[in-house]
Length: 77
Image: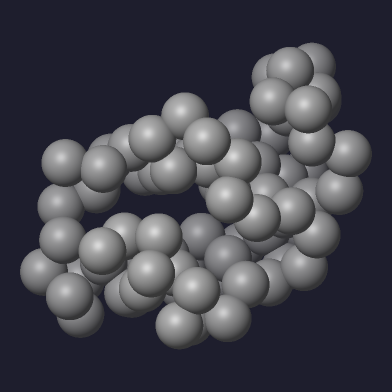
């Protein structure tokens, strides 16, 4: 099971990113442990200054803007 964290303040782009990750995981039949992190101190702790950001298995794979569906598929593969 992949660990996925979506980092963001709760803005529309953060919500869209969270939903996209859920949709891609469901479509691919991939089990994920999804956590949404809105606490600024925790976000900065990942070294992220631009949100939304995505962390997969402890590694920041994206920051700033909604990621493309194909990129999410690659991260979860």
